[in-house]
Image (cartoon, rainbow over all chains, first blue to last red; front, side, top):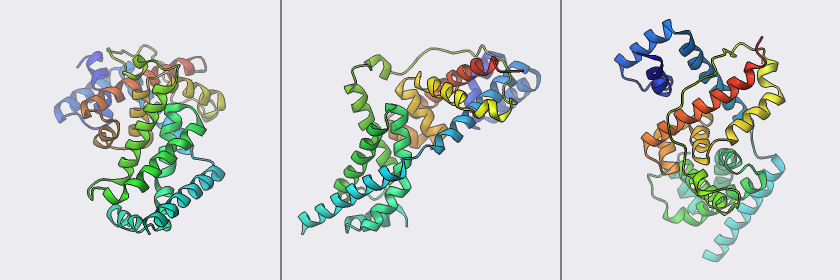
Length: 83
Length: 189
């Protein structure tokens, strides 16, 4: 496996979607190619940083409550119409 | 309570079920909308639209459908409508990126101290990097790598083939890695 093959298969390798023989070739290449190892490791780190930051984002509590109140009102209104 | 039971209760207009569904799904929909629209107020509107559609649709919901992915689908389509209505977004921006991409910055920045990786300046660069992606790449990356949905769920929500999800995710990851690597390169000791 060459570097450009490794890059092409990088996401499938990370997601464990490569068939066994290709995964073994990728592993062998990564063991001997420092640059590809760095690309793999920094890609994983990139994903982790976004995941950690991303999951911290939530609708602020006051707007959460306000929006839910509007939806509950809509639910009640539909209920009254159906009756 | 599973989705079928929740839907049955929602059909009976049970507000505690609406509360449970809202608690379970609102923040994830909000994150996708903020990521795509870059505007918190518009994101609130997207969440509201998705839940109003659910209330409207509850009686006709197919038993096998997953409420979470259904809400995501409505929210994503609402985001696309709002993006198309925005004068600054061209259709090309919505079409997705193409072409091979080879990493060129090969600095290993993983072991930078936490304060370098997690400070506000680094966060601002992460935001600029992800906002430089097309909406499709942003959505695929957000659903797969932040929300950790499966390829098939992501494909269903975004109305893409599974192959397209994988290709777009790969492009998004490589672009983001490159941007962050260039940013951290200057801070690497």
